[in-house]
Image (cartoon, rainbow, N blue to C red):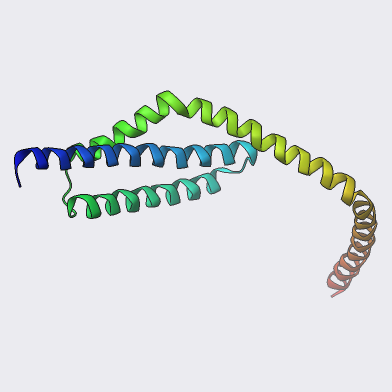
Length: 150
């Protein structure tokens, strides 16, 4: 193998690692969008982040294994970081704004449609819920009285 082919292979590896970095940050942006639309607690955010980093580790490992026979090269890891940084500074803000607007519009439409379709069932469900709530309160009161008599 001559030097030009070797340098070409290294350039391809750098390009692939940069694309992988951008793709990994895109996945994280999707996770951020999900968190904006459906807010949830710190525990779930931690679980999501843990799963994300496991995915990142696996993706980088597979890339290094396929493209570089498993040899860890500094410039390939640097390429991942550069790809992430380029995506973050050039595209991330726009991708998040656009996708959040699109998804909120879609969910808002389905929410309004669903509320119109299911409003009769909601009224019946509320009556059933109140019926069972009243019965459970009576049962709980009877149990408390029975326990206190002993």
